[in-house]
Picture 1 (cartoon, rainbow, N blue to C red):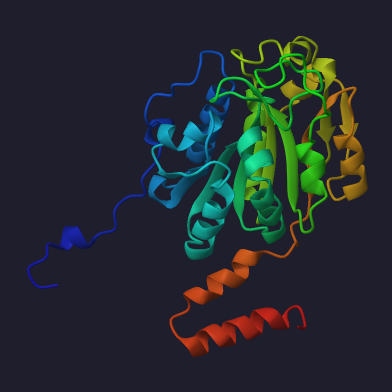
Picture 2 (cartoon, one colour):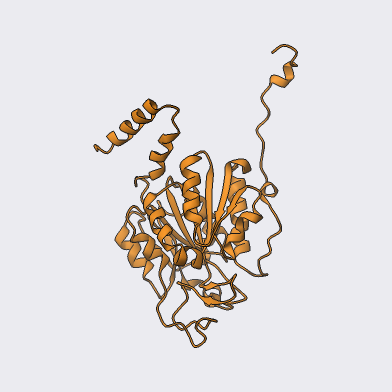
Length: 317
Protein backbone atom coordinates (compact mmCIF):
# COMPACT_ATOMS: atom_id res chain seq x y z
CA UNK A 1 0.00 0.00 0.00
CA UNK A 2 1.10 3.58 -0.74
CA UNK A 3 3.08 5.14 2.09
CA UNK A 4 3.25 1.93 4.18
CA UNK A 5 6.71 0.77 5.16
CA UNK A 6 7.61 -2.64 3.76
CA UNK A 7 8.60 -4.02 7.18
CA UNK A 8 5.10 -3.23 8.45
CA UNK A 9 3.70 -5.74 5.98
CA UNK A 10 5.64 -8.64 7.48
CA UNK A 11 3.68 -11.08 9.62
CA UNK A 12 4.35 -10.84 13.34
CA UNK A 13 6.13 -13.72 15.03
CA UNK A 14 3.80 -16.19 16.75
CA UNK A 15 3.35 -15.25 20.37
CA UNK A 16 4.28 -17.68 23.12
CA UNK A 17 1.93 -17.66 26.11
CA UNK A 18 3.34 -18.38 29.56
CA UNK A 19 1.40 -19.36 32.66
CA UNK A 20 1.51 -15.71 33.75
CA UNK A 21 -0.56 -14.76 30.68
CA UNK A 22 -3.51 -16.66 32.20
CA UNK A 23 -3.18 -15.41 35.79
CA UNK A 24 -6.03 -13.12 36.72
CA UNK A 25 -6.85 -11.64 40.12
CA UNK A 26 -5.21 -13.33 43.13
CA UNK A 27 -7.28 -16.34 44.18
CA UNK A 28 -9.14 -15.76 47.44
CA UNK A 29 -10.11 -19.32 48.26
CA UNK A 30 -9.30 -20.62 51.73
CA UNK A 31 -5.73 -21.87 52.29
CA UNK A 32 -5.60 -25.57 51.49
CA UNK A 33 -8.71 -25.48 49.28
CA UNK A 34 -8.49 -27.90 46.36
CA UNK A 35 -9.70 -25.17 44.01
CA UNK A 36 -6.15 -23.76 43.96
CA UNK A 37 -4.83 -27.00 42.43
CA UNK A 38 -7.52 -27.01 39.75
CA UNK A 39 -6.79 -23.38 38.85
CA UNK A 40 -3.09 -24.16 38.47
CA UNK A 41 -3.88 -27.20 36.30
CA UNK A 42 -6.13 -25.17 33.99
CA UNK A 43 -3.51 -22.44 33.63
CA UNK A 44 -0.88 -25.06 32.78
CA UNK A 45 -3.26 -26.67 30.28
CA UNK A 46 -3.81 -23.32 28.56
CA UNK A 47 -0.05 -22.77 28.47
CA UNK A 48 0.73 -26.26 27.14
CA UNK A 49 -1.96 -26.03 24.45
CA UNK A 50 -1.07 -22.37 23.74
CA UNK A 51 -4.70 -21.28 23.93
CA UNK A 52 -4.96 -17.59 23.10
CA UNK A 53 -6.52 -15.82 26.12
CA UNK A 54 -8.81 -13.84 23.82
CA UNK A 55 -10.06 -17.14 22.35
CA UNK A 56 -10.70 -18.77 25.72
CA UNK A 57 -13.72 -18.31 27.99
CA UNK A 58 -14.43 -19.50 31.52
CA UNK A 59 -18.08 -19.86 32.53
CA UNK A 60 -19.44 -20.45 36.02
CA UNK A 61 -22.56 -20.25 38.16
CA UNK A 62 -22.51 -19.53 41.90
CA UNK A 63 -20.35 -21.11 44.59
CA UNK A 64 -16.74 -21.27 45.71
CA UNK A 65 -15.69 -22.99 42.47
CA UNK A 66 -17.60 -20.41 40.47
CA UNK A 67 -15.09 -17.70 41.40
CA UNK A 68 -12.94 -19.33 38.70
CA UNK A 69 -13.46 -16.72 35.92
CA UNK A 70 -12.13 -13.97 38.20
CA UNK A 71 -8.80 -15.77 38.55
CA UNK A 72 -8.19 -16.45 34.85
CA UNK A 73 -6.95 -13.71 32.52
CA UNK A 74 -9.30 -14.83 29.75
CA UNK A 75 -12.86 -13.95 28.89
CA UNK A 76 -15.23 -14.99 31.65
CA UNK A 77 -18.92 -15.16 32.48
CA UNK A 78 -19.87 -15.43 36.16
CA UNK A 79 -23.52 -16.33 35.89
CA UNK A 80 -26.43 -17.19 38.15
CA UNK A 81 -26.76 -20.16 40.48
CA UNK A 82 -27.06 -23.36 38.43
CA UNK A 83 -27.05 -21.54 35.10
CA UNK A 84 -23.45 -22.02 33.96
CA UNK A 85 -24.24 -24.72 31.40
CA UNK A 86 -26.98 -22.94 29.39
CA UNK A 87 -24.70 -19.90 29.19
CA UNK A 88 -21.80 -22.07 28.02
CA UNK A 89 -24.02 -23.78 25.43
CA UNK A 90 -25.13 -20.40 24.14
CA UNK A 91 -21.53 -19.25 23.81
CA UNK A 92 -20.55 -22.46 22.06
CA UNK A 93 -23.43 -22.29 19.57
CA UNK A 94 -22.64 -18.71 18.52
CA UNK A 95 -18.84 -18.73 18.89
CA UNK A 96 -17.59 -22.19 17.87
CA UNK A 97 -14.08 -20.72 17.55
CA UNK A 98 -13.72 -20.29 21.32
CA UNK A 99 -12.30 -22.74 23.87
CA UNK A 100 -15.05 -23.10 26.47
CA UNK A 101 -14.44 -24.22 30.07
CA UNK A 102 -17.09 -24.50 32.77
CA UNK A 103 -16.33 -24.48 36.51
CA UNK A 104 -19.20 -25.65 38.68
CA UNK A 105 -19.70 -27.13 42.13
CA UNK A 106 -21.74 -30.04 43.44
CA UNK A 107 -24.51 -27.72 44.59
CA UNK A 108 -24.42 -25.47 41.53
CA UNK A 109 -24.51 -28.37 39.04
CA UNK A 110 -26.26 -31.24 40.80
CA UNK A 111 -29.00 -29.34 42.63
CA UNK A 112 -30.46 -26.14 41.18
CA UNK A 113 -28.64 -26.73 37.88
CA UNK A 114 -29.54 -30.42 37.51
CA UNK A 115 -32.00 -29.90 34.65
CA UNK A 116 -29.47 -27.89 32.64
CA UNK A 117 -26.79 -30.49 33.44
CA UNK A 118 -28.83 -33.35 31.98
CA UNK A 119 -29.67 -31.53 28.76
CA UNK A 120 -26.13 -30.20 28.32
CA UNK A 121 -24.90 -33.80 28.43
CA UNK A 122 -27.44 -34.74 25.75
CA UNK A 123 -26.54 -31.74 23.56
CA UNK A 124 -22.88 -32.83 23.69
CA UNK A 125 -21.48 -29.44 22.70
CA UNK A 126 -17.70 -29.20 22.76
CA UNK A 127 -16.58 -27.86 26.13
CA UNK A 128 -14.73 -28.95 29.25
CA UNK A 129 -16.98 -29.14 32.32
CA UNK A 130 -15.20 -29.37 35.66
CA UNK A 131 -17.37 -30.45 38.59
CA UNK A 132 -15.42 -29.46 41.70
CA UNK A 133 -17.06 -31.78 44.22
CA UNK A 134 -16.34 -31.16 47.91
CA UNK A 135 -19.61 -32.72 49.16
CA UNK A 136 -20.85 -29.51 50.78
CA UNK A 137 -22.18 -26.02 50.10
CA UNK A 138 -19.10 -23.99 50.99
CA UNK A 139 -19.84 -20.43 49.87
CA UNK A 140 -23.12 -20.31 51.82
CA UNK A 141 -21.38 -21.77 54.87
CA UNK A 142 -21.91 -25.49 55.37
CA UNK A 143 -25.19 -26.90 54.10
CA UNK A 144 -25.82 -30.45 52.87
CA UNK A 145 -25.23 -30.78 49.11
CA UNK A 146 -26.56 -33.50 46.76
CA UNK A 147 -23.24 -35.34 47.06
CA UNK A 148 -22.89 -35.14 50.86
CA UNK A 149 -22.43 -38.58 52.40
CA UNK A 150 -25.27 -40.04 54.44
CA UNK A 151 -24.83 -38.97 58.03
CA UNK A 152 -22.92 -35.78 57.20
CA UNK A 153 -23.50 -33.16 59.88
CA UNK A 154 -24.14 -29.70 58.44
CA UNK A 155 -26.13 -26.59 59.31
CA UNK A 156 -29.16 -28.00 57.50
CA UNK A 157 -28.74 -31.48 59.00
CA UNK A 158 -27.03 -31.02 62.38
CA UNK A 159 -27.75 -34.63 63.38
CA UNK A 160 -26.67 -36.02 60.01
CA UNK A 161 -28.16 -36.10 56.49
CA UNK A 162 -30.80 -38.76 55.90
CA UNK A 163 -30.26 -39.89 52.32
CA UNK A 164 -27.52 -41.52 50.29
CA UNK A 165 -25.70 -39.03 48.03
CA UNK A 166 -26.24 -38.55 44.33
CA UNK A 167 -23.49 -40.11 42.20
CA UNK A 168 -22.52 -37.54 39.51
CA UNK A 169 -20.65 -40.14 37.45
CA UNK A 170 -23.57 -42.57 37.38
CA UNK A 171 -25.96 -39.75 36.56
CA UNK A 172 -23.86 -38.56 33.64
CA UNK A 173 -23.39 -42.08 32.31
CA UNK A 174 -27.16 -42.57 32.43
CA UNK A 175 -27.98 -39.62 30.15
CA UNK A 176 -28.50 -40.17 26.44
CA UNK A 177 -25.55 -39.10 24.27
CA UNK A 178 -22.97 -38.89 27.07
CA UNK A 179 -19.59 -38.84 25.33
CA UNK A 180 -16.77 -38.25 27.86
CA UNK A 181 -16.88 -39.04 31.57
CA UNK A 182 -13.77 -38.93 33.76
CA UNK A 183 -12.88 -38.62 37.43
CA UNK A 184 -9.77 -37.33 39.18
CA UNK A 185 -8.61 -35.81 42.47
CA UNK A 186 -7.15 -32.40 43.28
CA UNK A 187 -4.27 -33.77 45.37
CA UNK A 188 -2.63 -35.58 42.46
CA UNK A 189 -1.63 -32.69 40.14
CA UNK A 190 -0.11 -34.84 37.33
CA UNK A 191 -3.25 -36.97 37.02
CA UNK A 192 -5.48 -33.90 37.31
CA UNK A 193 -3.63 -32.17 34.47
CA UNK A 194 -3.56 -35.29 32.27
CA UNK A 195 -7.31 -35.73 32.74
CA UNK A 196 -8.08 -32.12 31.79
CA UNK A 197 -5.81 -32.39 28.75
CA UNK A 198 -7.73 -35.46 27.55
CA UNK A 199 -11.01 -33.65 28.20
CA UNK A 200 -9.91 -30.63 26.17
CA UNK A 201 -8.89 -32.89 23.26
CA UNK A 202 -12.32 -34.57 23.22
CA UNK A 203 -14.60 -33.31 20.41
CA UNK A 204 -17.77 -33.06 22.56
CA UNK A 205 -19.03 -32.46 26.10
CA UNK A 206 -16.22 -33.57 28.41
CA UNK A 207 -17.44 -34.05 31.99
CA UNK A 208 -14.71 -34.27 34.64
CA UNK A 209 -15.61 -34.82 38.27
CA UNK A 210 -12.82 -33.59 40.53
CA UNK A 211 -12.83 -34.81 44.12
CA UNK A 212 -11.96 -31.52 45.80
CA UNK A 213 -10.95 -30.81 49.38
CA UNK A 214 -12.69 -28.24 51.58
CA UNK A 215 -10.49 -27.84 54.68
CA UNK A 216 -12.95 -25.44 56.31
CA UNK A 217 -16.32 -27.21 56.16
CA UNK A 218 -15.28 -30.78 55.27
CA UNK A 219 -11.92 -31.20 57.00
CA UNK A 220 -10.47 -34.65 56.68
CA UNK A 221 -13.02 -35.80 54.09
CA UNK A 222 -10.36 -37.27 51.80
CA UNK A 223 -7.58 -37.76 54.35
CA UNK A 224 -7.84 -41.54 54.16
CA UNK A 225 -7.46 -41.57 50.36
CA UNK A 226 -4.58 -39.09 50.56
CA UNK A 227 -2.73 -41.16 53.14
CA UNK A 228 -3.39 -44.53 51.49
CA UNK A 229 -2.86 -44.52 47.69
CA UNK A 230 -4.53 -47.95 47.51
CA UNK A 231 -7.87 -46.25 48.12
CA UNK A 232 -7.55 -44.79 44.62
CA UNK A 233 -8.22 -47.15 41.70
CA UNK A 234 -6.18 -46.02 38.71
CA UNK A 235 -7.94 -46.84 35.43
CA UNK A 236 -5.51 -47.82 32.70
CA UNK A 237 -5.98 -48.47 28.99
CA UNK A 238 -4.34 -47.48 25.72
CA UNK A 239 -7.45 -45.39 24.94
CA UNK A 240 -7.65 -43.93 28.45
CA UNK A 241 -5.81 -41.14 30.27
CA UNK A 242 -2.09 -41.17 29.52
CA UNK A 243 -0.21 -40.82 32.79
CA UNK A 244 3.45 -40.78 33.73
CA UNK A 245 5.14 -43.94 35.00
CA UNK A 246 5.76 -42.16 38.29
CA UNK A 247 1.99 -42.06 38.91
CA UNK A 248 1.68 -45.77 38.21
CA UNK A 249 4.49 -46.52 40.64
CA UNK A 250 2.66 -44.67 43.41
CA UNK A 251 -0.88 -45.80 42.54
CA UNK A 252 -0.35 -49.54 42.43
CA UNK A 253 -4.08 -50.31 42.73
CA UNK A 254 -4.89 -50.38 39.00
CA UNK A 255 -7.65 -51.68 36.77
CA UNK A 256 -7.54 -52.17 33.01
CA UNK A 257 -10.75 -50.60 31.72
CA UNK A 258 -11.81 -50.04 28.12
CA UNK A 259 -13.50 -46.58 28.09
CA UNK A 260 -15.79 -47.69 25.25
CA UNK A 261 -17.43 -50.17 27.66
CA UNK A 262 -20.44 -48.30 29.07
CA UNK A 263 -21.60 -51.17 31.30
CA UNK A 264 -18.09 -51.52 32.71
CA UNK A 265 -18.01 -47.77 33.40
CA UNK A 266 -21.27 -47.98 35.34
CA UNK A 267 -19.96 -50.85 37.44
CA UNK A 268 -16.83 -48.86 38.27
CA UNK A 269 -18.87 -45.78 39.19
CA UNK A 270 -20.66 -47.87 41.84
CA UNK A 271 -17.44 -48.96 43.54
CA UNK A 272 -17.39 -47.99 47.21
CA UNK A 273 -14.19 -49.79 48.21
CA UNK A 274 -12.01 -47.45 46.14
CA UNK A 275 -12.27 -44.18 44.18
CA UNK A 276 -11.81 -44.89 40.45
CA UNK A 277 -9.79 -42.17 38.74
CA UNK A 278 -9.25 -41.94 35.01
CA UNK A 279 -11.43 -42.15 31.91
CA UNK A 280 -14.58 -44.14 32.57
CA UNK A 281 -16.33 -43.61 29.24
CA UNK A 282 -15.70 -41.99 25.87
CA UNK A 283 -17.59 -41.96 22.59
CA UNK A 284 -16.04 -39.60 20.08
CA UNK A 285 -18.79 -40.27 17.52
CA UNK A 286 -21.76 -39.09 19.60
CA UNK A 287 -23.96 -36.46 17.93
CA UNK A 288 -23.09 -32.84 18.72
CA UNK A 289 -25.79 -30.18 18.81
CA UNK A 290 -23.31 -27.38 18.15
CA UNK A 291 -22.50 -28.88 14.76
CA UNK A 292 -26.05 -27.96 13.77
CA UNK A 293 -26.32 -24.59 15.56
CA UNK A 294 -23.03 -23.44 13.99
CA UNK A 295 -24.68 -23.85 10.59
CA UNK A 296 -26.84 -20.85 11.43
CA UNK A 297 -23.78 -18.61 11.13
CA UNK A 298 -23.95 -18.96 7.32
CA UNK A 299 -24.46 -15.64 5.56
CA UNK A 300 -27.64 -16.32 3.60
CA UNK A 301 -30.81 -18.37 3.94
CA UNK A 302 -29.92 -20.50 0.89
CA UNK A 303 -26.49 -21.26 2.32
CA UNK A 304 -28.05 -22.20 5.65
CA UNK A 305 -30.56 -24.56 4.08
CA UNK A 306 -27.92 -26.17 1.86
CA UNK A 307 -25.61 -26.73 4.83
CA UNK A 308 -28.43 -28.08 7.02
CA UNK A 309 -29.60 -30.50 4.33
CA UNK A 310 -26.04 -31.73 3.84
CA UNK A 311 -25.61 -32.28 7.59
CA UNK A 312 -28.95 -34.02 7.97
CA UNK A 313 -28.14 -36.19 4.98
CA UNK A 314 -25.39 -37.80 7.02
CA UNK A 315 -28.08 -39.24 9.27
CA UNK A 316 -30.53 -40.08 6.44
CA UNK A 317 -33.25 -37.91 7.93
